[in-house]
Image 1 (cartoon, rainbow, N blue to C red):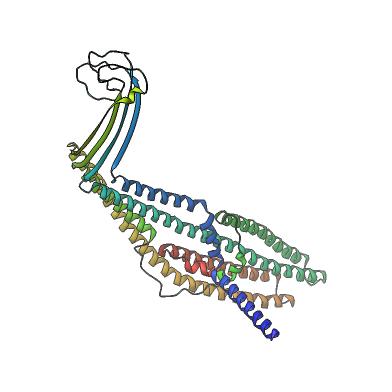
Image 2: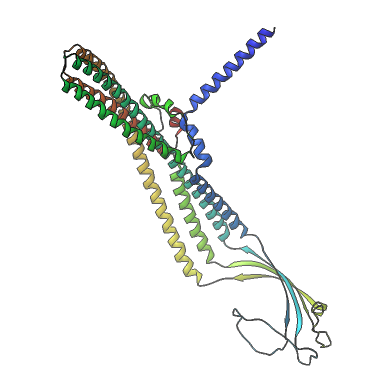
Length: 459
């Protein structure tokens, strides 16, 4: 019984590990890197902070529709000489009132506290349009953040593909080094046996050294590409070598892909919400030219150190003893007649800006649609080219092995063999470049469709 339980438990653990391993392989290394970019890249955090700021601004605009309640209190020490006359209440003026026949000190304490309530009951839709403007701006900023996220996905894919390109070129150069080293060894042996001249040995060594130089250059380019990738991933690395086979031999893309630009694409969404924001602002400015109806109310407490008998006191606590309270409630209408002209011009300007954004939306939509159709057509041809270059590489490799056998048998000159080697090297580079161009087209298509799932799963 114990053996059976141990066997069952071991089988379950093995299956769980296999499932976990399969899931990791299916997830794709590029998807793992994107998770790290989302978690730690400062550019995304900047855009998120901008979205939060827009959301707070939206709540602020909503708060403007609430009743405005104001409180104030003051305690002062002042004279009380009064005189008749009139003046405009310009900034810098203060009010003093008094009566004749008062006795006592010329200075006394005063206390004043008040509370006012102002509530705009009717504004012809001004605040409603301001609220819609703020909401549209929030959506526009969110669209800009999503657009930046798409840009980052594209940039991450580009840098990852650059790293894979340099890695495959380095591996191909390694194969080239092995071939040239074999030729150099054979030529050296034949030269020592007197079957080949010393010049052939020097030529083979020269070709090998040139390949060594190319290897050092490619190592530098690969390391530079890795550094560029790590800048996005906060230093997180992944086993990119596992992506090399899929890079050189990608799966054929399905033919039933979307051929239309989605209206919810972040670029188009941002433009549309920006147009809406300008349109709502225009309507809000037009409404601002109309009168506003307000409910106003107030309550005040006032105390002074002057008694009812006309006696003045300079004691601080007497500033609270002689007091009165008052209340006020009413409805007021305010209307700036000049706004009928100025706000009309402002509203007209904003409407034209909104119209401009609408035309820009159509322009971007047409450009993106044409670009998507162009890329999808090129993708079909590019995959065919990649299949042919892969076949040509295999044929060139098989031909090289045949010519190498002829060279070993003394039936072929070294110069002719090295020319065949160059043709094989060109075939390998041609296939690598064709694969790279294919994946770059896939990245461009993913950006236009806002769907990087195929790339992130298969690389």
